[in-house]
Length: 328
Figure (cartoon, rainbow, N blue to C red):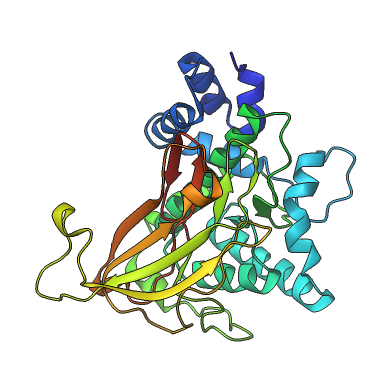
């Protein structure tokens, strides 16, 4: 049975850890992840969210109190950082922290520093109440990967899960709630305030649809997994359970995951994506021949008002279960 202290190390939220410990033991990782989602979204309040956000150390910190896991989680981003991008990250994080009242948080597995910086700039434009929800969803992704490591403690380390940038302000939850509340109740005239000028390109740095695969049984990225991305061609009606083998599915691209579990480009980089139905299929039978699933297909819809959004659809796979979610 997992302890409250172990769950606290996954989240930094005392309420989350207490609720998870009360809900345990869990039959498997999938059971633990389902419970974590329910607790985080339905039982932990804003104070608990902000407490979890504040538990992330500043990237690059040399403090002896920074855990080895935190250093590992920051290593991938640091490996692609330059002096100029690091300085720009620090500056934009300060802007972000001043606007929203909490640290910029992102599930950064396999992402380069330029990608993270571009995402920070994009999210800076969000309304505070929207950004609070986005940050909470990013934190939930981090929980899921840390839970996978908790359930397979002797497995290899899952690389670069989260990235929290430097902050220099108070981390008291009450201070942050006050800032959020002030934004929520602000009048419409606040929209006239000048937004800091963005530097660098604001165009996409990756295709609109991306994915990665994690082997949660082995606690490592899943390399060598064949992936196909398809789009539904019939604009008159969408796909159904009975049309899963239809010739209306058009192959857009194929790839094989690398040593980080990331796929290569499955479609061209474009500023907008065509609305419609998409399907990502993973050849899990080839990757895990003794497993239960010969393949896994995930179908999702991109709506008209989502043309400019990014869709990251990862697969967390084990021989007898899998999990997916929409990332950013």
